[in-house]
Image (tube, rainbow, N blue to C red):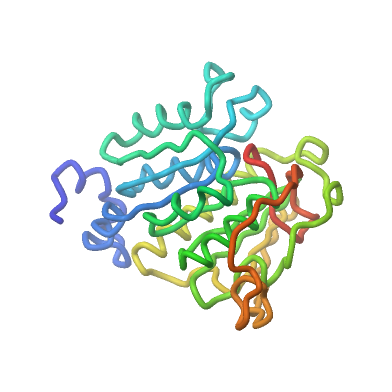
Length: 277
C-alpha cells in the first residue's frame, strides 16, 4: 500500500517517528478496530483512532445522547441531545477524517451477537461502564482470541489493562461481577470529566501500539491512576491457571448475559459499568 500525498501530509507526525514510519502508518490504515461504547471512554478513543487513520473503525452503542453526558463525552455536542450516540459520533468522525471507513452498530452487545460482531476486527476496546458488559467482552475476546483493552473510571480514578491470547484476562483478576448494588453508580459517585479522557487516550495508544508492534503493551499489568494526586501505578498481574474462561481447564465455554445495571469502579479496584460512562 503506497501512501498518497495527502496521507503523507496528514500523518506526517507519525511518519517521522522511527517506531512508526511509513510502514507503520500503512499498518494503521490497514487495521480494523472495534470500540464498544461511545461514551466517556469511547469518545476520546474514537477521535484519536480516526485522527490516526485507522482504516476501519467499528463502534457499538444503543444509547441516545443525554445532557448529562456532555460533561465528559467529548464526541457529542449540545445539538446532539436526544440523538442516537452512534449517529452523533458518525458525523464527527466523518468530518475529522473522511478516509476512514466507519461501521456503526446501533445496539448494545449481548451474548447472542458479540462474537459475530468482534470476529472481523483486529483489536477491541471496552468503552462500556457496566460489569455485565465488561465480563461479556472479556469472555468473547478470549473465546475468539481477540486482543482488547479494558478501561474503567470512577470519581478521580481510572484503570486499564490489555489482553492478548495467553496472557492475563479480566476474569483472572476479577472472577465474576460484584453483587447488584455493591458498587456505586457514576450518577451516585460522580466522575471528573477529564479522567475519562485520560483513560481513553491510554486505551487508544494501546490499540495503536498493538497495530504497529511498538513498545510494551499493558499485558499482565493493571495500570491505575488517581487524578487528584497525579500518581500512576502499574501492578503485575499473573494469569490464573484456574481462571474459568482462559485457565487450563475452563468452565466457561459459552457466553451468557449478566444482569448488572451498575456503572462504576470499586474505588481503585474494578472496571466501570453501563455504556454512558
